[in-house]
Image 1 (tube, rainbow, N blue to C red):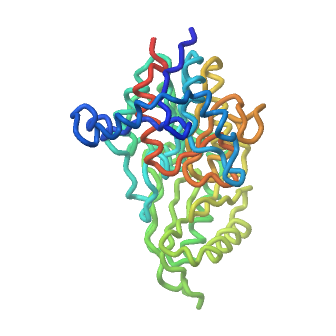
Image 2 (image 1 turned 180 degrees about the vertical axis):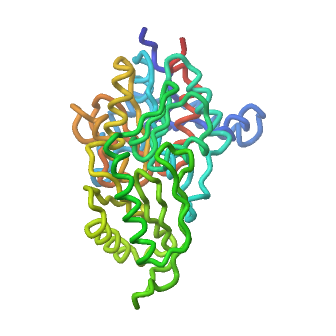
Image 3 (image 1 turned 120 degrees about the vertical axis):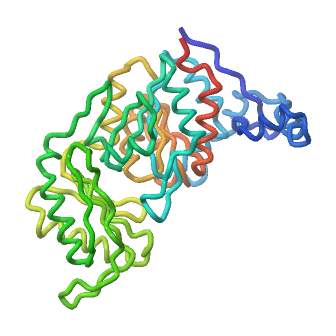
Length: 362
């Protein structure tokens, strides 16, 4: 049964206030100066959520989607009207900050508690959808019962079962050949690859600093991550060599792959994977089909997340009110998401608000 949306306080400028952080709530409960300041701001009910929506254009900032903090009233209405919520989230740059060392990102205890609380509700399903290998992703999130989609959905763990895309599994050797060619070209010195079942998840190669033995200088600061089904070449430590890395990867795929592979790009990474019609968007579509009456929501920060945003914006157009809600983490330029948050701190506010709401409760 549809529930009345929780009313949210509005600021004096007519925009909906973002949900309070844990620090805000603690300060208010303590009755200190910080709490008094927050209280005086949120006690202003001179504008309603509908007023805020009317005053804030749907698409602003040169075509970028509006900030979620300005539009929580809209999201509250949709979560209140749904029978349940499918919440999909990327990992790096969304649930955890992007780090120069890809082995560093970790899920905070606050994020883990929020995911556990939401996933325990009968009307909420949480899915973490990442480019990381499945075993790596599961070990970093470590929340029992959530759906894990590794390698952009080529590995999917749900309902106690793990499925691997059959064509991707057949092209593991082609991915491995590309990694070997890049190791030779970049003079990498260590390989820690794993099996397709994720039991020995592929590792990150040593940074490349030496020549390749053929008179060609190596590219310093490059790391090759062989994830078996896909591979990621990181150049965060050498952003100025991005064009060299992209060219080297493209040439390796063209000359040694043998089987159809495709190259894609993200934030200072180049990815190699099987050329199959599968991605984060199709993964979210599959999971949404498991819960056809639920509202799907997806939060992500990178170009690979755009496929999920486009699936959720079907029938709504760009930034439209489509099948679900897409939320971009970052500046929001050239995104199909309906809303944006500035950084992972905005994701934390969203999770806190969802936990405090009654979405998915019996």
